[in-house]
Length: 553
Image (cartoon, rainbow, N blue to C red; front, side, top):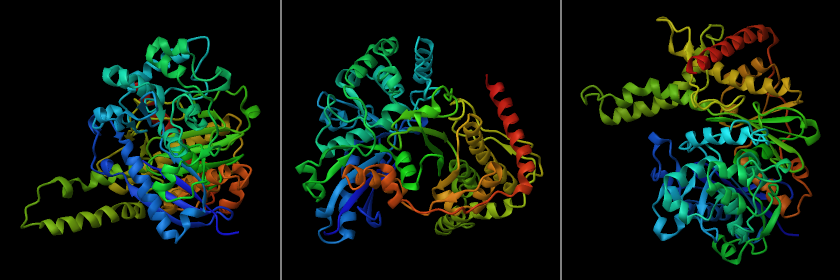
């Protein structure tokens, strides 16, 4: 038997990456990446309005380019060896589509209209609509927020409500709306029609609030109280969701030819990027995976019977068959983590980047070189000095992008307490690190306090690999050992696991993980001598949070 490959396709915020892996061993063979060309030019976005839109053509062009680059690196004939393809995307990233399931931005009349494009996960134009949705979803006989908590402006119904209210042309042209993960998978399988497209359980449960207890989506009556158009969208959501990795069809001849792959390759239902990353890292029963990057996502799975009767709506989002099929997927997150450190770096770089320094003092070429040097060195230098600042009483909140879990509140702001004229930059940096770590502790403790079992904690992402200072503090503050994942392309690896399941290489995601996921040993162990110090600092963090939140009300 010759070599067989699977392709994991990871659609991130800035680019798409294709990972080709040996279908039976999970060993990475080659990868390819392509940045979205229109997104790179900052088209269709308005940061002042927190509007972030992406063109469907970017997704198509990016997939073709990344796949061909990966196949070229994999060697002659690699395309014919692909037996399965699965994708993950950001989410909730929905797009208005016509009756045939074509994104409106692919139609000539809407080609340059941002409202006709995919609304990226971090688009926050629907904050006011989210507030309305929360009021309606939680006040009837059925509380539709019971499994996800406070509804976010980043999610499915809020984005639809905002855009169709503000743009009547879109309202009239959009038969319904489709998530990015469902559309791309459907495109490859030749089924994007709204009546028959496969909805993945990750998007359906976490963002559209599909749940078996509700008999599906929130009721049409409930949605119509917000806007009759939402009731139409629910009515046109014909099929029940399926778990990521479910076989949904064979690749079309058109796409097999365009990508240069085996025309018999099987396509798996899509997933979210963080969920695929969790699978690639080894998330499972009693194993929590934390993706530590610009923001964080924490994932855990458990049996439905364990969660039954627990009121977890303030602490995590729950969706059936999410992340790992057969379980309830639990998702928690902090909307700012690495973003906080990046903000502080930019704050310190302001003079050299923004001030008009005369040429006789600093030439343009020298300025560019100095800026580049400082951009790379400033955080490592701060971290080195911050090691001596840990015992200082400076307290910071991590709510730079609001707070998701526990107790979502998009209106809260960050704060730093106990500043004096003697406070130095490393002390502020150390306080910011403690704030982000304590935000993580608040999420972790809420799960333990609600009776969930966590036996392993696996950290994924650039910060986990690059910053021993942050990860040791996290281990000390949480009081648990932490294992750091070595894999670079974790989301694409998880998508490859889903692809292998869709191609029937493995009977389940869990079986695929046994082969594809690395074996872990703890990298960081808690220093018990620091437990009391961190507990006191954590109490200060909680007190500051209460004071800031009360002050905003």
